[in-house]
Image (cartoon, rainbow, N blue to C red; front, side):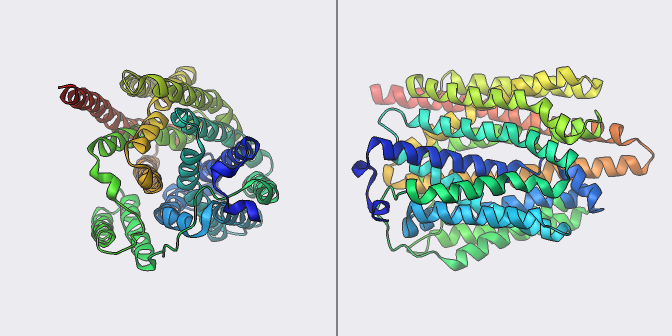
Length: 475
């Protein structure tokens, strides 16, 4: 199609608007693909007679595959262009969803998740980079935050839709929604998608792809296993760290790195990403552990658990959009520190509510935490991507998305692995499932609370650094 080779400047406002709508819808699909199993871990473990830690590989393995693909996303975008990348991602999602719909055992279900992971790995960095290119001047933060808010809406309704399908039709039927959405976008894609920048003959370093996958897999396998077999887990983590260190070394030695690490030369980018990722871990904690608590301790079905979480996640979507508008006009002070403060307050309240089994207080504290994350994650992402030169925007977006998948993997392995170990140990000693899940939830929550406090201190330090540099420039 001839339009796929034109730049965004040559496209009409109507064509650009249609492109943005399809890109946002594609990210909704990617968010559903990523989060759909969050309410199904307990059901997956029960149906296939596996431990919770093994069922967690439907989330953990997804993140490892997505993280590996994300590293190659900038190179793939430059080589193939936006049109082909989005269409390929839609096809992977459709194939994975179809396989999940007909899956016959745990391993076929896991394979379906791996296919879906390719879609999220392609879409999250590529769509963010494309939106930055087509965004009007002065509206970049707003558009990026709108993108995150749309993803938040997908995250809000994914547990409900997955829960009702899981509760009344069965595990496999959860895949029908992403299958229908994938096919719909495949039909719309040829009429709306076009490349937003010229293609370049940029090769993809196959060795880096293999090395990054091995490193991710070894590290996350070890982290997932460390609570059950300390030595075995530590060996996996050490091997993974060594392999990933070689990956980083290789990126600085080859002409066309899979992941260009130059944005890390900017201190404020590094600091901002640290704040965003540590705060993002609280969002991941709630998306993974809150459903387990509501199902395992409160005794709700996956559908009811998903309904309880709709309002908190919609508040995240709302605060994300508001935060982007504020960041466009006023910057990150006092927006981000206040947001992290809300996270700390919400997590503290959740610890109390979980101990006393007060579901209403638990949900209110979830809402406060999610609201705070919305003020931090998307505004910091937008600011960080604007800090680097425009020629590095695709690489910075890939770095951000890679870090997000790494943090997702760590959160999944650490929190679910620890809760699985705690609950299995307590139930083997005669504790009820509700008591075991409650203890495991509070234990992991205290860890996440400590991480949030570190994020708060870093956000205050970042604001101090920005003020100091502004004063130096003024002199």
